[in-house]
Image (cartoon, rainbow over the protein chains, first blue to last red):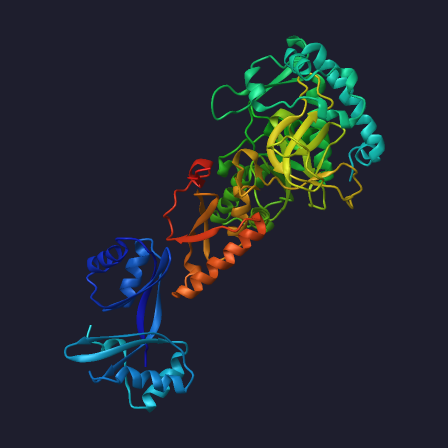
Length: 141
Length: 430
């Protein structure tokens, strides 16, 4: 089973940067489901969950930007309190570091997107605990 | 191999006696014939009789490129105009060039020093020398042309460019030596490869003499790899006859400067005071044998240092380190002299960043190095970028002794230029 791919890009931390990236995706007719920005001072990393990660990566590179695909886990959870906690606790017991976590709602379904230090064991332990891990094509993008 | 073993391995005491005798003679001649030096000597209250040891060299005035321009065209000529045999010029980016005159003896000496340098690098009579430097007013091609003829090589005055013709000549006449700028040598390697020629299989190339522009050891390796030959670094400047001032021997560790013809000093470009042996500074040269246009303490503006340890090749003439930059490009940050080339060296050795950079100076000596990130340097993690940034800042600190801020930029966001104007942005309010 494939992990979900995020498109990560190097970005300067200045006004107009997100717009610069989103314009490229809009022009390529790519739908953005989720965006995370991590910055340190003058620059940072933007990560997008999009309808077509390969195309998005290609579009960024075509515009002279630095971009690459990174793996993430997408988990469908009931939209109720304590669900992220359950995931986090499950990983903590296995000493797996949670690098990044956030979620979104689409079509009345709730999804968590997480980046972890080690994907294969994370996937395994989450599945053992009955979490539904989605492949790229199972996401409502 | 030696061309003139006696002079190349002369012991230091004898060499210094010879230098003093030639310096005294040079000073007497310029004092008698060159109004520019007459005036300088009067200002400094120095006469030829005051030069009793090599240490007295420091009493003599510097000569700068501005002095050469101010005395254009014939102001620094020390012999009658009729006795000048050849004119070269050194191009200036602005205004008049520098006019450089050679007597018959000067032409012969310049060629002899080139011949000496070639033999030092292992050139023999059987070699075929294809000269890819520009013929004309520039000294680079003509002086080496006569030098290679003195060794007895077949000399092909190909001139620069015309890569198809260069390749044809190399194939048809089994060229063994080339003389080129580093940028052209690199281009030629690409050209040859694109034409399906394997230099090791299809050509007879042995050695390249590469100079006239500063270049790094990495460029040397690329040229050696691409052309299947050994690269020898050579240094010269038109004001000092052109090529043949300092060349590498087979050790390829520093360039022997022919001290029977030149006195070298390394000075602090700000104060004009000598630096300690081994320390980097501006190269200053005095001609010892030149008839038509002797120059005293000429400020080359090239930055280098002297290697004082004996060379295993047996030559006693001291060696210069590879030219590190131009003193014109020097910055002073927190009291430390910094050359953009130092930064370039660090960046070139660091995977994950591009070679293009900008130095921004702000406030009270705050230094930021902006550098373009390369694809290989991006792992999609902020922590990794910070780690790379800190690593680079630390490497730069080790090289420059000043720790800068490092800032990454996306590719192609800095202007591409070699000039100081775009490389250095000085907003300091000092």
